[in-house]
Image 1 (cartoon, one colour):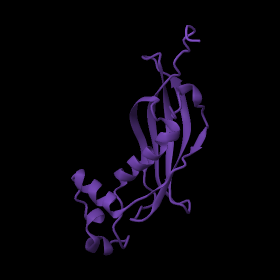
Image 2 (cartoon, rainbow, N blue to C red; image 1 turned 90 degrees about the horizontal axis):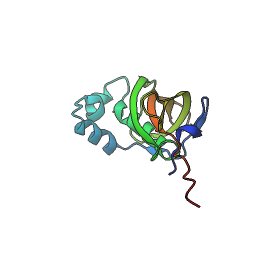
Image 3 (cartoon, helix red, strand yellow; image 1 turned 120 degrees about the horizontal axis):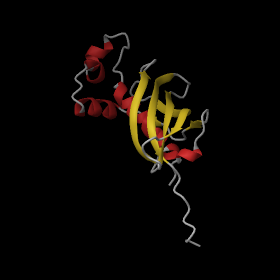
Image 4 (cartoon, rainbow, N blue to C red; image 1 turned 90 degrees about the vertical axis):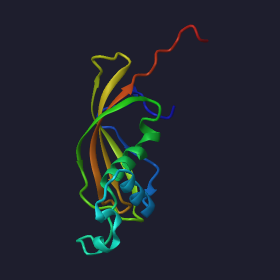
Length: 156
């Protein structure tokens, strides 16, 4: 599995995730409509053109999901039990159609699970950035990672 187990992580570790993704108009409008978000800043160009942004902005919940998703291949693919929660989610700058978003993660805290000996609890901080470094999302995420399975001594 390409994801990291609890033992593979350490506080202060930073991971720049390799893949970025360009956000399309379809991403924004479809996500907004699927989630019943009728905010015209996401779906009405005429309305949004008269706003301080001058154009439609991408739904921030989509950007949160995108940034977490961009972290999966190098961080958690196949090695987590679940995301337990999100804290301190902020969107300091808007994302527009055609912007490319990249993700970075830092390990903030770690502890062994008190209820599951096969898992550990990790607090992560994720950033979503445009290629010029503009931060479009910051979020902390609490994740239950699997611990590395013990090696079976009976297997040669």
